[in-house]
Image (tube, rainbow, N blue to C red; front, side, top):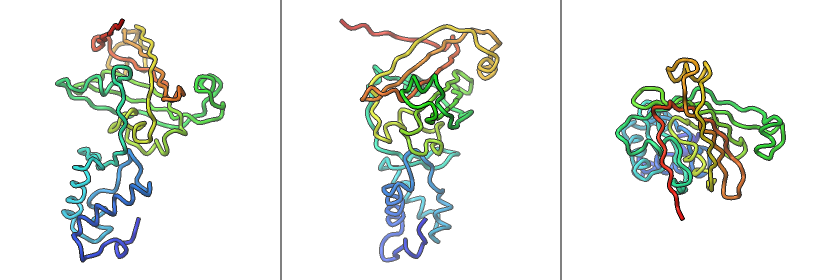
Length: 244
């Protein structure tokens, strides 16, 4: 990051200079969409100014939709958003939004892995190409409701490992990077849970759950994401719209 002597000009309001400084870092892609930026304390220490001045700059950027603040986690860069047709593509976050419930997400695992023969064929890539694996546990009103395992093409989102996926949904992340989702294909099946999923959902082995197998495609009809969602059966409700 830039030395304070090259950043601060005391002839103009400091909070505006801090805002400009952060925006330049975003435009230069030093701070990427979906990633946390240094705290107000860190910026104050770096720039040698009062934390309240830095906080005023942050608040302005939040009001403009450039930053998103999450209590207990920090401030995150928000990228350009793309509107998606939720009648066709509806993730877990959108499904529960608007209801009087408290939703939270815990990221259990995230790492890169080679595609291998099976997923190379599914994604249309080479066997040694990389996929990003994510496992998340969703809570409704502090009770575990769903466990979701997802594979994403590593090459489509730069530094996805640095994005907090308990703050941003994958749909939001795709929008940040200009990936326009076109369609999703879902297969629904009632299954008996394995020990691992049952334990995460506070259920007994072989209890029933709804398994949703999803494939998401971009506007060029390229497969970019495969996920498997195990949801407690008592929390599952679907509405199907028929059109002539």
